[in-house]
Length: 572
Picture 1: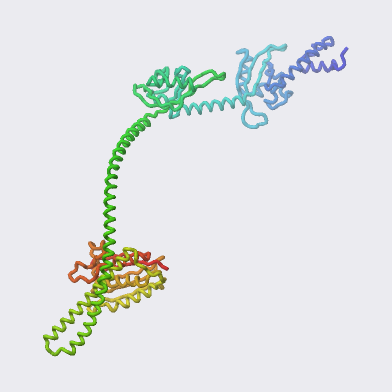
Picture 2: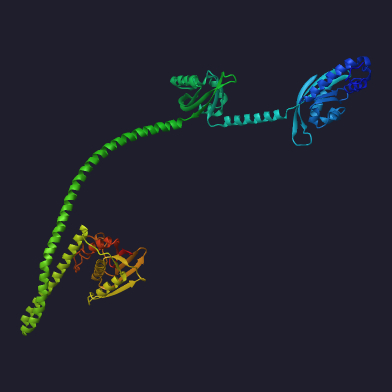
């Protein structure tokens, strides 16, 4: 009797046939045992279907797939029912089929290989599969048990790892600095070509053949060996250690060493990884630089001592010169005060002399006309007296101008000259001075006076009388030194200034005298046979007046080709 819930005998028979049992195996007396075995097989198949591996059973005689489980259908893109009964050779790559035929022919009882399956659904790329083959005996003959595992991700990881290894191997092989590995006691494990080159070896193999222990065989000095061992023990690393190293030829170089201890997964010491740079050139440069620095410091000390002594001498000289300048300044003040006092004292009687001389000249001229007869001798004496009086008046006037110039210069140098602050029309000043100068022209001179005012000039701020004084002086000088040609006064506005130029076609100024044109008591043409009269202070006073107004004065001259004197005044 069947228990409630048990499948019907005919259902168990169907399950037995599906699982590979023949009709003859199924009898009613065998149902309980059959049911137990069927349940176990179903549980086993359920477990197989949960695995990620594809499992195939292939008949060794026919080559047909008799069963498939696990991920077999997913790998080939088919349902399990579609795989059973198909030829294995129709579904798998040729190399896998050949391997399987070798298994069937008895060449081997088991095997392993890797192949590539097209991805289900033609999604592009391939599915990397690892296959294991094993020949087993079944009730109906030999059965090939084939287990396929998807190793696509593993292959990708292996490929990535291989590329990374190649990349870092290339970096190490082509690095400019030496890279090495040693055991914990300093025994050489590996080195790159740069390491060999730095130490004078033809290759890394040559280096490894000659150097057994990097500390003992390469480091030149014992104290450096002790320091390396001490720091590796205390700190597990050494950083930027500069030491002397021995090369293959026996020479010595300076190397910059870095190394650190590498530990395994449990924390035990495994090896040391390190790098080496050849810093010999830099070290020699530093030593050379230090030598130069020492020499420079010595020279600086010597030069400092020299400068200290020179400074002491200079300080002494400055003190003496300062005292001399103070004495000169006091003397200059005394001179100015003296000149001012003398000028005042002279100007008072001079004014009386000039006044009376003019009066006498007028009265004598009238008196001689009435008293003198036709005696030629007396008339010559009278004419001589009149000429002498005119000389007295002329030289008196000259002396008066000299005294006035001396007083003006003294005031200007002392800063005591007071200037009016008023608006001045430069056009009016130019016209007035040129009109007045026309009367100064000697009848014997063939000189034309020209005036050129460009546009309407803006007003300037200053002392009108002093500006006239400057222009009168420049025009007078031009007339003095011009026998023929022209004297031209030009005025124009230029930016923030009014520019006034006086140009003549006279004798010009020699190159040897141009540097002292504005010096005191220097008179242009002093070396001429017929030298002009003057005090030699006019241009010096002009320079003081112009600069006191915020302008500047300068000239351009060429011997025998005339001169141009220019001064500027700021626009109001």
